[in-house]
Amino acid sequence: MTDITRQALGRKASIGDFYDARSDTIIENTLHFPENLLAVAYHSFDNKSLNEMWGDSFEEKFRHLQVEDELQASYHARYLLGFDVDGHAKFIFRRQKTQEIFYTLLYRHRTQTKRLNYEKSQIFIANNYKELPADATHIITDIDYGGVATFTVGGMLEDGVDKSELKEKLCKTINSLKEDNWSYDFDENLTIYLDHDFSNDNQGLHDTFNDLSIVREFYRNFNMKIRTINNGIGVPIAFHMQPLEMLQMEQEFPKAFHVPPSEIKRITDMFDELEKSKIEVDTLNCLFAEYAYCISVPKEDTLSVDSRKLLTDISTDLDLFAGDRIEALQDYLLKTRKENSSNSIVDCYASREEHRSKVIEKLQSPKIRIDTEKINYIKRLKGSGVIYLKKGQKLDKEIEALNCRHCYIFFGRFSLPGKEAKFDEHRKNFDKLIQQNSTAFFVDVQMHKDLKEIFAKQNLYNLPSASQIGNQIWRYCVNSNGKPELKFDC
Image 1 (cartoon, rainbow, N blue to C red):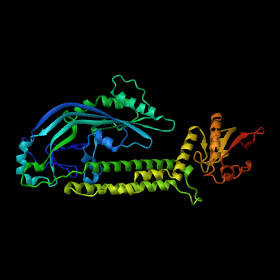
Image 2 (tube, helix red, strand yellow; image 1 turned 60 degrees about the vertical axis):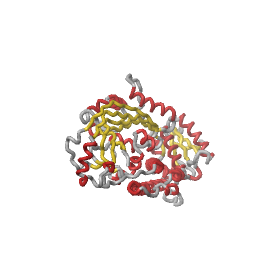
Image 3 (cartoon, rainbow, N blue to C red; image 1 turned 120 degrees about the vertical axis):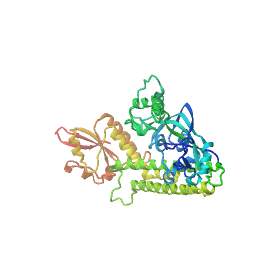
Image 4 (cartoon, one colour; image 1 turned 45 degrees about the horizontal axis):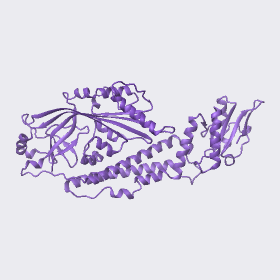
């Protein structure tokens, strides 16, 4: 075995502590070194580095946080292996929402390295080898101190938002942190996420902001903040270790074999895809729950597919498969690192229903696609001031409540663009009409099967049935006699 380095990722350890490289866990020092043996050499630095990245892939995050390959693999099974990450490492599991774009500034500042007097300590360890932890493969001989913080700004790519303009805003927001003379007009629709190593002493500083000035102040004072922690050196940011087998004792120490880098990449890519699929499915499911009133399957329509149930089933399957792969990963890592042999946990992924390509295929199924497009259409109508008539609401009562003498009503049967010429034509006509008239209603004839139910005073109007009136625009007005009328418009 050779010397190894592991990023701290918010974990705490001291010089002389031990490490199990097979599970990537820190083992507290049980030997109780005499103080003269723990005397350390101090190497002071003032190393600062700034890096920027787009997106939220595990691969890019690990690269910018300098996470070693072996620790990357362990990260995905960390709870089962017996460790967790904290501080700035919470950035790793911060993921973009669907239609959200991330731009991140990563700030790393190293202040000092402490080094164990290893040569003198070797004799003490050799004389007390029976007290060594049974699972220890390495001893921590050097610790880099300082601090790491990540500043992530996120923006939603919604309808009407230009992607290049949004990315330009994200860049300007990050750049404004570094400018001495700040004159940037921050867009409050953006969100800033801050992950750092001083969460236990953050003076009420949370991790999500819509106020750039607070985040800017933290960035500007980050170096000073480090100097207030642990006698001015900050927190551990990396551990350097030597293998115990280098002591050349009769005692045989556990070995830690390496996982092939190519397999680690496959593992990381698989979990990255599973998380992206999970976020996309759950986001869509939340949207469908919010707009259930316009997409719910009518009870009498027994042949229709319930898109919400379909999404819930996909989400459950993703959870179960991810959990199964995490357990398999734990077994794989321990077996490979102990015995230098094991089978891949990724091979089965390509043929599974949870594979990214198959999840995308399901999300593009006709039912989910039409429900998504319908919700987007209803959202756009509501954004233009159009009132969607929900189940139980009475059209004439809603009109009376608005004290309205004239409005348009679109009795629509939604279909995807290009699928139903009549709906496409009347949708365009309705768009023009609502620009001219401030009050308009959309009556969804797919949800209102019996149009008599939408009126409190049914004797006033003589409408055709829902099947006959689909995709027609009617005009409501109060005639010269003061009586309300509904007339076919187009």
